[in-house]
Picture 1 (cartoon, one colour):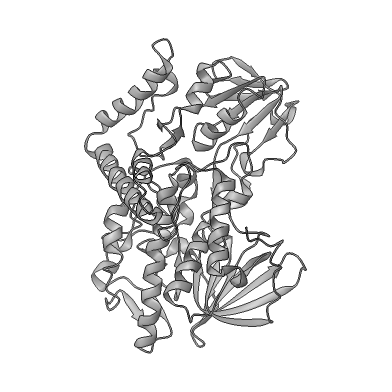
Picture 2 (cartoon, rainbow, N blue to C red):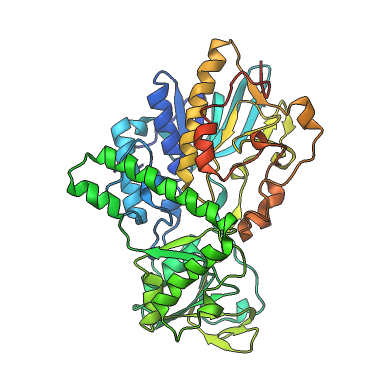
Length: 500
């Protein structure tokens, strides 16, 4: 595995210039760097990463049992076959990324412990000036780049979101957020309450059930889950037939994407049918005596929030064994001994885990300027979720909610690796997305329609996000099945792209 320990961070010159500067060495940054090196081998580029290693989410999140909630055939990269179980642990994902870095020689391009503090565009020079702090030495370093590729994710890595409930200071136990899980925290013999019902809670609960005295998932309202064996029958059959792993990866990847698209369309066209099927599976697992209506029957249409996959039904099996339980109620306040609920019931606890989401962050919270004027991304309009009106030579990788994040990483990378040679061929040093005259008069909308998708973290941070405009060019689509054909067909000569 390649990391900062085995490859010390080189000290850049005071003003190192590159063609492309990639911010972030998580799944988006590593995938983008691989594509850039493959498709544009002569391009000079650097990847800046604030942490001391690669991996992003898979490094900062260290809570027990952390795993993907997307299959690795689609969360993994198109160019690197995934050969393990479809739902993978953080360690497995990081090992996979490390292989890619080593095989492609990306390590020499990555500057670890570099936290970006500002990014400033100069139209006169047609370049970005990026200032970073070296966290290992404290010195300030500067880079200039013709193009900026933002791959830093979409939430704050240093702090998770947790509401402030009355009485928290009175609680005699410990309160932790999964995003900042202490390495030395031992749950053995403890009474644990996990607040939340999303993928993190569904992962954490079975991971600690059986080790702690008891774990309770306390939710305000239920969430949809899908469950099944942590294996893919098609992949196993193809391996039995001794099909090459690269073929298996592509075949299985296409089959999963086809099935996911069909399922998503069903949630819109026949939501009651999908709802009945999802809940029916849980009824079968939990048996006739369990109150599925209260604890696992959401009030919203399927896919208005992310649906987590529960491999081998481990969440439900922990509940069936009596090692875990679910309580559906509101929180009145914390007490010295635990949590008092809206119903008056008190849950006694030694440890409370607030699996309540994260703080959305646009462009990593980095201050941007264009020709000395501060950029407010909430005042821009997005071009297909990756470019922004008034902000030249920049793309942002913001993945899919209803499919694997890295699917969009590949699409954006292919676009950039077409765009940059196109700019060179026409003698342009800058490009910016601009609404067409007839579109500029139309109404603008939020980044995502909350009737379509409305998780709490998105609603809390919607005011920070760029606006959506009229038509598919000016929206962040959640339809990968359409995007996979639409992105390669983008006409780089369209008037939406203003070259200089």
